[in-house]
Length: 422
Image 1 (cartoon, rainbow, N blue to C red):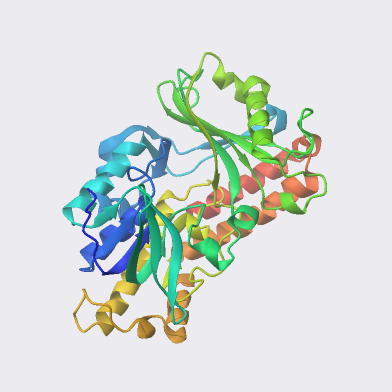
Image 2: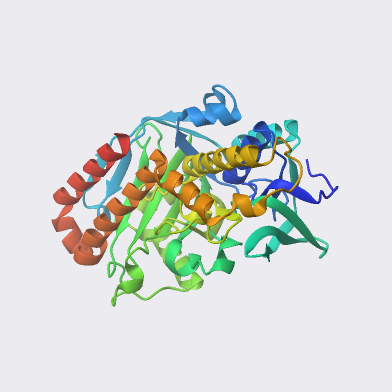
């Protein structure tokens, strides 16, 4: 899969071999342009996880007709159940049906297509720095597993590295303090779950001040993601949109988050029931970029932030899978057309970088992106959840007040779900 012959120049240099980066590579190659994907892990999409998503035509376009339907373990009714603090009340929200499937089956299909298209992937290669010339990002430096430092140059650099935003951080994008929410992802087998009774995603609200053993812990949500049989993904997400501004919140350390997580598994009403007799196969504290979107996805000429690197995630479902793929396709398609226009049909030679990345063109790209229907949907979702969390987690804040207003909260959740389907 990984070629060792280093080309001097690529049309697209892509950082990260997750769905966003792999989609970018596929679209670039199908448009006739050469691309390279640089991945720090030993394989594409290295982290284990459960996964689920609704069907979108884009999946067929990228991965083949009916591919998602061919690998799913379970088709879900698409509902989501929200539990009030202490599991005292709940509301079920109807959403579009979805498919639960194995992450590795999904990623391996991307890799199969990447190989067929002869897109190069460098594995065990960690990007450490951007290369800027004449105020344009023209490439990146990366370190191989053996410590060797290499440089790759290109017309277009796409940072698809996710919540760490390995290149974005060089341009003062504060992922940790502004963009990301800490999240624990945990894969469980032999869980205490009956898929017939619990077919939908479950979310448990926990307000600030609700936990006696950690009263300053930020407002958060635990979730249960039924995969199939007695297998499930479970987790804890800290909701940071307003937490950093709240006097009653103390931002916890990693150890404090893991300690709270252990206690929630042991005894939080409703949620802890799923862990009786269960076996934890994988557990990790990581982050997801769903606190807010990056304001400028072209922080420097030559570079575009894609997917989670741009906070391009549906914050209500905390899902970035489809949206990162859609964003990758949008930008690669748009920039491919620009390359076609200026390169006189020569797609293998660096030409006219200043023309690609002059201020007028960058404004044109940004305007088109902001007019993109999916961009508008994501922006609207952020506006909705910002107002929603302000009222629930900041104004109401505690379990008692949230439960007292649960009927009103339920109606807001239903309205948000209806807007997302429209």
